[in-house]
Length: 265
Image (tube, rainbow, N blue to C red):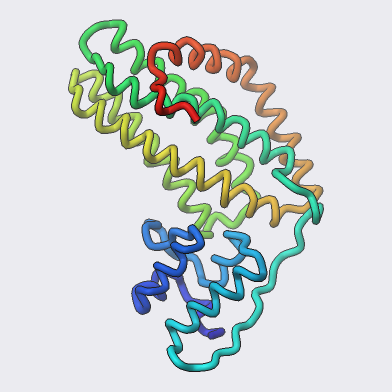
């Protein structure tokens, strides 16, 4: 089994397709990942499985790879957790999670904006421009900049999970450019298509960060590094001034008209 622990998960799934279904049972969606260079042993650490779940998962995978054979499954080594016993996110990660709340409020408005899409009138076009301004100024320059310029520098940027985050950010920017082009061309179908694609991308991206990336990074960072991150995030907040308040006011203005009842959670 040791030889497979050091193999890429994509290759294992290709050779043993049933492994994908086993991972899905633990909400580990490796098959759809466009990067797919994680090693099998990385999956356990990144997704922070409990020792019990790790044992059952690896036992099931071993049963697929070595059917009918008794296999010794080595216990994966885990890095010591900074501040062991601490529940929840560290202060810098909590900052990022809290920033996601406002981004999710914008994402929740997109179905309503699509339902009322108007690329001809100035008020209709203004809603799209305001939404793009939020995405570029708050979600990207304010929030994603903290991740790319600060947070992710504390990790190995060759890791699959880090590459995936960068790829998501670039795909989001591409959708925004396509939205603006569609608006300039008065191409309602293109604006609709890329607004919806952005909504779907960010919904999954935020879940990926909140549930996988941030907890995983919290387990890798030392207490000193967590303090450094918190200080650097605070400096970034000072540089950006009233950015959070400005864009919260924008969302407050848009919500009464574009928030769908079914989007309320």
